[in-house]
Image (tube, rainbow, N blue to C red):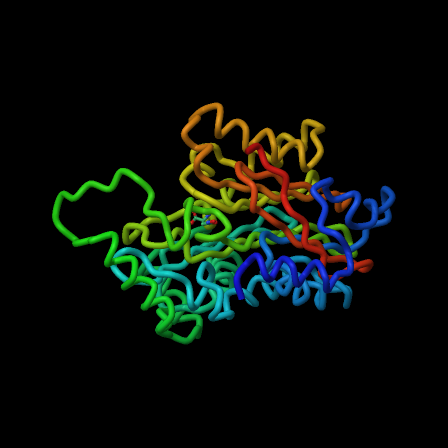
Length: 340
Ligand code: SD4
């Protein structure tokens, strides 16, 4: 199902007009101070199904860390999803390499980057956090660790993704030659790198009944990237950041721009200074464009939630959406506001 039809379906299913007026209109107001309500939010339309899995954990009184891990495993396992987990589009050499990170309420974090052959990188990231003294494992080392931990080795390139890669090869005329230069982003099927028709990531933030926040972020990265390229998603502070005193943030879009600006950390620090989640996301997006005006042709979106469960988002371009789930409603999908 394409994104637009899904959006329409979700609108009808929820019986609610999608609104660009932001979170307050679409879901109940934030809980009163002290009265924490579990809530989970995540990027893009596939966040709706992911949130529902997270909600099972939250509504049973579970921990936000378990909720975000269970939540993002849903798109990781969805073979129709070409931007996360198994079924993700490969790099320019036809290899599917995955990035993921996770962070809990204590500031513990774990991540894997450029990892092949493991369908659930988020769970490997959690093992890195919980069972090693490290934060980030990459490439072959990440794969070795995952196999040692008992994760099954799988072929991640599905026939669909393989077909799309071969289509791309026809127009890209890519040949792995020595000293070749790649100065531009390779657009995927349909448009601007990072936009709704090209590629996206699931970033999820959850607050549990105890008021504890956790986050997770997982992706196959930009389609047709150089082999070995790592985006923002597994970089703590870039694609994901959680501070239990303030809130959490996550990002989607062209990861290079997010890394350059340490985007999710910036959003959280702006919230610490008193900005609302939406304002903080907007400022982070606009800082990217101020520093590099050409970035307005790309897509980057931030999603943030504070410790009271207030949610906001902002993107460079139209088309970004995020899903919100709490006791009042489990399938809300909201278009993100944007600068252009
Ligand atoms: C990356 N941020 O690897 C990810 C990809 C993405 O929309 O979110 N694209 O840069």
